[in-house]
Length: 108
Image (tube, rainbow, N blue to C red):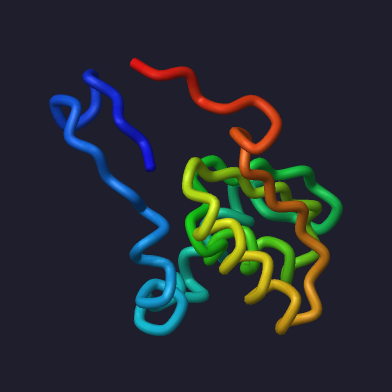
């Protein structure tokens, strides 16, 4: 759980609680979105992409399916766990990182 004064006036929130719903109900992006991105050089095979705030990895998985080398990072560990599970189910090799496992977020 994250509590930061500069975010939501210090109200605690836990994005991880949304993971099961995101995994099932959040639609992916339309193919046309990725066509436009590729036209401007984003998401091409072999390209390195960092997905900050990856959530359940919807963007990360789509870029990996196109052949990009993707790392996803999120502040909610449950989101990272769900993202990794979905990527594994889709046989995608994506590195997902929860940054506070090794370095806990300092209290505010």
